[in-house]
Length: 102
Image (cartoon, rainbow, N blue to C red; front, side, top):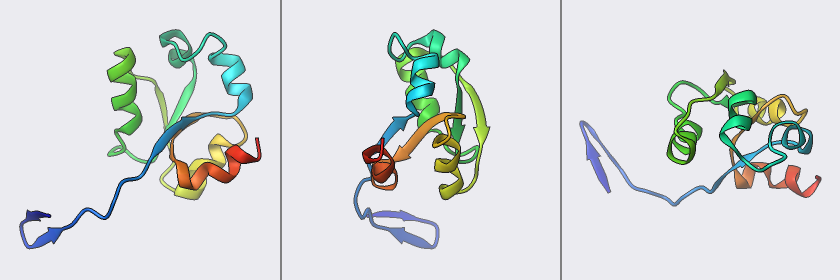
């Protein structure tokens, strides 16, 4: 339980996130795996300026920032990833049906 000014919060669990992209994005930018060069060319999507998950991943593993687009809608977020315009981090539970559909 965490306490802050005027409130208390209790953790309810954890959400697994995966970095996802359509196969054509993977073919275009990540044919040799996820590399600094591929990430530097591809466009990633984030929810808003407070969404640091993908930034932290890229900084931790590659020491870089990437070209970012903001889409402040959870449904819209996946709608940008689905046609192959961008890649991004999404909750596994929210995108599982897309992964199963290919």
